[in-house]
Length: 403
Ligand SMILES: *Cc1c(COP(=O)(O)O)cnc(C)c1O
Image (cartoon, rainbow, N blue to C red; front, side, top):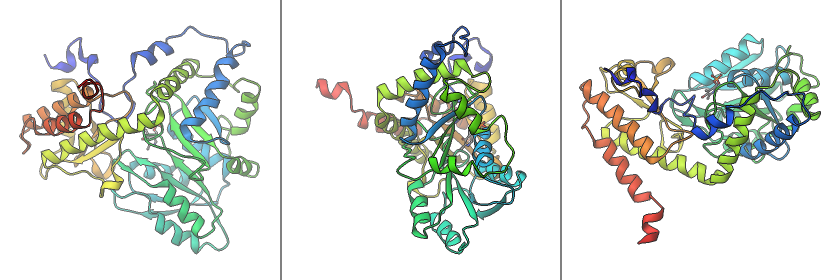
């Protein structure tokens, strides 16, 4: 019987870059009886969650807003609350997620200036500066950036985008999709001058899908007063008015709010810096494995390599969809398919959220078996061994101290 059909298949972690594995502690935290959101004690749970989530975004002044929705609705909330039909926005297309955000902006009647970039590159700060520098009338109202392109495994330098905008003294707002980076890679909203940061519950927060998690700067809140794009469910104003009174403008996703409380406690107990270091180290092990297999990442240079997802080209003549399907059918383990123009050409290993060395090694071992089954020109065990070497050498812990 293929592993995917045994009663134990759900012991296997997923290696898709979201939704991510939900640790038992978070599942238990979300397994809650209904609490009346109009009861006086709801705000005692809810308001500290809003306040504490700000630390993860790296903001003191930003308002945290939670919608019962997903990251995609977060994009929509960002644009509809701050922009008007016909407003110009600037965005580069370098993967599936930037592509979808562009599509959304166009469908909302924004005038979208798109910089086409090769998939595998990051946000082109210098080109942004060039375009903004020619916009003397300041018609461009916002620059939109996908921090971590989950399709290509590329992380962009948001500080460089901010410097580029400042270098030409352009007043546009900066909106950043950090859905697959927040809580896993450093994010500094205030320091980087981000006006709206958009995330979701099901990636770095390790929770079920169903909540868009945003942080909004005072500048973006001011833009809200004149923005004319229609919004009702996603209107920041209704949300903030209700939040100020300790409530929600409609039924809150109560279990996810309890989950977020617990997730924050876990992230803070580990320490955000340690969380980022863990992701860096686990990702590096994956990259060593990719090297040992003789395969290459979609990310075009080392500083672009994401610590939450690796997108990996399959050798010429192989179909990455077959690989992902086979890994699932034979071994009951999910990996990410290649999205958009990478479909069939690359597969993805998600390595974010609740993971240890052991879990990552099991994923590498599994995809190695699947590749060997399909006659990929790799040596069975080579990637696992490379990751093992790296993890052993960088294991900072107890054994060495005991010695
Ligand atoms: C997952 C993801 C999203 C949002 O997807 P939803 O399914 O709407 O939550 C947006 N951007 C990036 C970069 C993502 O990885």
